[in-house]
Length: 300
Image: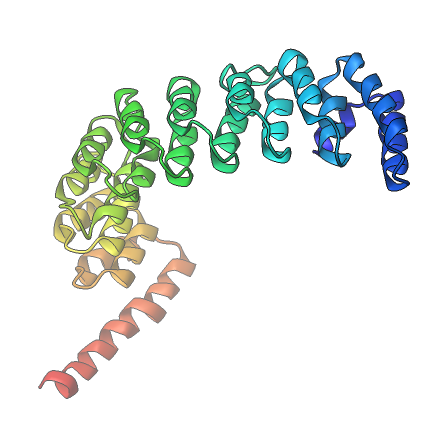
């Protein structure tokens, strides 16, 4: 509402303040006179402010000003803030995206579906499908009760946009196989890791690991081996060994159980700086020596 209030010119603000004061004194006739000024002024912002803030105002007459002269913002706030508002007619303005800014119009569609009882969620969601970004579609699917999650998800798949695949994968009823294919065909190693991390408890992730291996991406090979259970650790390790990146070799040796400490250590010693070599001696070598010392005590 503060945005609407900022749109009022000084005379409209004065009329509203006068109406508040007169209503406080219970002088109905004077309030009605001021209300007629607002209605005749044909200004949606003033009509909205009057309807929301002045008790017992003629909301039907003020609503007509919104319907005739208002934009999506005033229509949304009237529907949300005025008891007995004509939701369907106000929703038509929001659906038409009558606003100077597309992002604001889409945000209002989301908020209308979220906050206005009786909103046509499917119709509002269809506008998001047609005009929204992939992130807009996910937010609508995730936060709006009754949203057509399948249509929103499928829209992202048809657009070959894997950026939100890992987000849609967390929603009930997600098409996991289609999302995997989307990432494999159009995604990046980062998106492959993100999706695998989310679906590892419910679906095989070997194809996503293979994608990272084929991209020869040692950084995400490390993360995949660290975070995704039952990953093909040895093939991921070969990517790290092949890239000869001392930092990723150090991380892989430190964090991945069963890694080839000797082979990774050779990379650290050959390509690492002095600080990394000291970290290797302090973290990895000592940890290995401790494991060798404790193993007979635990299992011998």
